[in-house]
Figure 1 (cartoon, rainbow, N blue to C red):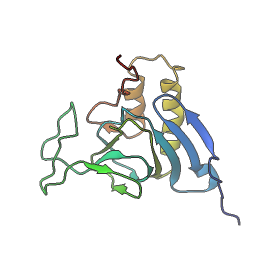
Figure 2: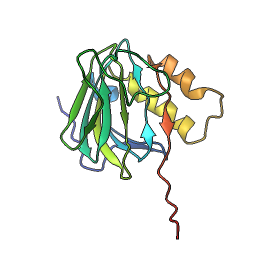
Figure 3: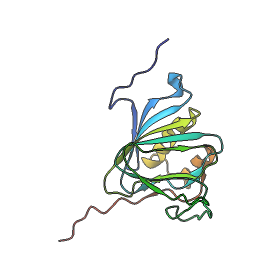
Length: 177
């Protein structure tokens, strides 16, 4: 029996302007947990959502991400950045070495509100659900799918109950003179 070693920078990559996903360990490798390295561009907000059948773990490697993993007193459908739990939990700006575990049913989100890319390790159980999801959303984000409401239909199919919208609003790169 052999394990799996994936050198730095290696793995199957799916790259769009919205996300860069590198597959590290998958169901095809015999893993019950899907492992990905994710580059999150400035302005990307996955939107608050839940999964009824999966668990997730996020570990910030570089940069900063706003993280949410709690049930708020009140769910709002426009934005999650001001949510607060009954225990007083709020969104956390997380830097390298920070992590977030998300049990099934827990509302969660991440956003890169900075001007620099962030990089994280993302694990999802059980595999291969998120592997298939990333493959299909790659088709949408890269413009290969023009189906109306494609992201919503995809999320419904993969146990993603979207609470607030996915957004990508990169910071302006124009300079005023």
